[in-house]
Length: 128
Image 1 (tube, rainbow, N blue to C red):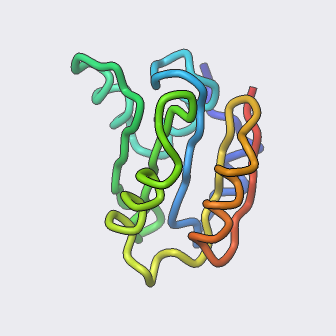
Image 2: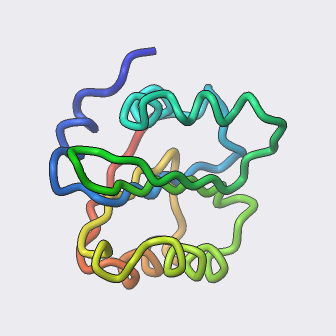
């Protein structure tokens, strides 16, 4: 699989946070996998070699010379409030300006509203 250029073009310099939401544990078949693994220089693929299931996964990586946070959540298994609480611990206040939320399938209103309140600006992206 090749990275999706439409998503890469929206995650250029200045992008600091990517929230990746799916409805199953993360695996190599999760929509958007090739793109995120490309952005993180293969870290996701290497991480998945360890026994799972991977219902929540987070990485901090350098992208365009700055810290870049990627957090995956299986919305069918993870609760919104604890997930947001973990984001607030993981991502410093100064880096919560803009987030891209990449959704595999539909996301509930509760998830969208919580993420919209957590970051000053949120761009919603869909992958299939």
